[in-house]
Length: 146
Length: 153
Image 1 (spheres, rainbow over the protein chains, first blue to last red):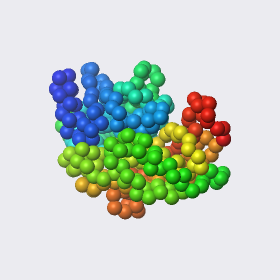
Image 2 (image 1 turned 60 degrees about the vertical axis):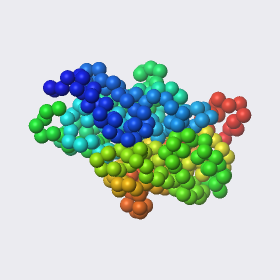
Image 3 (image 1 turned 60 degrees about the horizontal axis):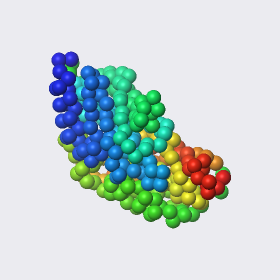
Image 4 (image 1 turned 180 degrees about the vertical axis):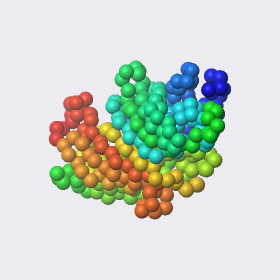
């Protein structure tokens, strides 16, 4: 990888800034080395059940999916954005009205398909609120330069 | 176990208003029947996922499928219960067409004592040509242990 951390951080901010839906949700991301943490800052409009209250399950799913797309985009040097093929989301705890974090683990990135796991948490990473497992269609750059 | 499948309890518009995120996405109810709903998210430029192609974001489809599946469960229940998504699997067949909104049809085909099972299809023009399909399971009566007023089933 020839990119410096700063370049990657800028790439990531540019990427999220270009996706209107990421802006709508308020998603941002921080890089520490090659490890990315996506952040979904709390906002009232992310609530699905105001009685509990709890974050909307669809928002959590969308956030996990976006984390996978962002991690693939910064880490793999792709042509265009990865396209989601399928995702399976397990909801483990209800999302409280507070900031949510997520990290993606690329288990395999082949020539066409990437297999990714993403975990979202709020207070402690050891108590995830949801996990995603998904497949994404990718087009790696031929020269292999990230 | 069809005894819990009954006429729509009239809770749906209430539920829609109660979900701030559904309103934020501009979600509307296109139709409601027993255990079946059709919801719609009209196209909006701030909901785009791939700016080069101008198509609605996969995440919006995820949120719509999740919400529609939950509403289908509500439409299958006799009495109001709090529900929570247990798992949601989504297969993406294709992108929505640029500039088009997305509909979602969801059917709650089985309700047991504590779990409801739902299938959903998201489409832009024709239900037979889906953008994405979903299979979901929901926990029922999730506030039973928190509320002293909750009735046991």
